[in-house]
Length: 67
Image 1 (tube, rainbow, N blue to C red):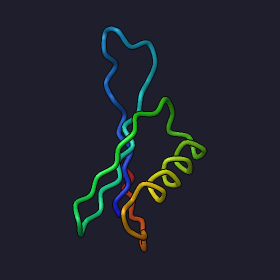
Image 2 (image 1 turned 90 degrees about the vertical axis):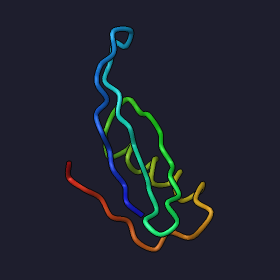
Image 3 (image 1 turned 180 degrees about the vertical axis):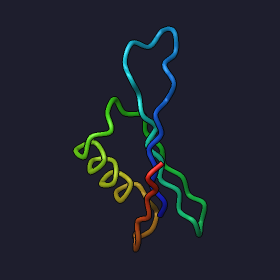
Image 4 (image 1 turned 60 degrees about the horizontal axis):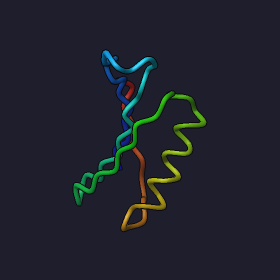
């Protein structure tokens, strides 16, 4: 499972930062995404927990990137 976080650009009608959290399974290409208001460790942990709950399979390995 690949996990990544991307900062979303500010839109004219949006007043605060938003982050796209993504999880993509490299074997099945299953995708799960959420938009969150921070990229804190608390948000990251909550996201990974939700991915594990929603995934239609057991997650064996989690890979992340620094970009």
